[in-house]
Length: 127
Image 1: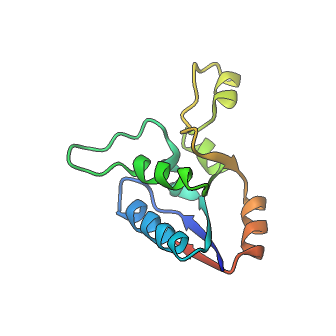
Image 2: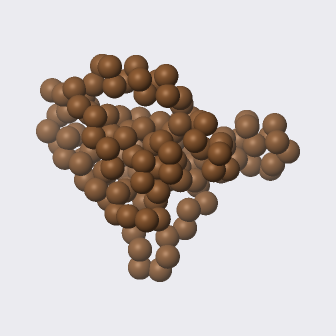
């Protein structure tokens, strides 16, 4: 059994990376591997709870929710997220906003966590 880190760096609106990454993760889980996802750079846009797909487009949020229900970690780089206006409720209240923009299935994390995860992973795959 291997442990895969899936590094998502593509924004949610420019490619089918959400579909590809979720399919890869599902296949790894089906093969009894463990999977963690880390969203970095423009990839943090997947964690914005206000993402709304256009008519006829699949919802990337539904794909991530499905993985979250399978106990897959969905970690988001806090620094990259903050630069893109994505924050949890606690951070939002510190800036006098009514609510955060982070979808609650995601967890803010840091590059130190990514470094620790990759040192223990068997494979890192980037989308």
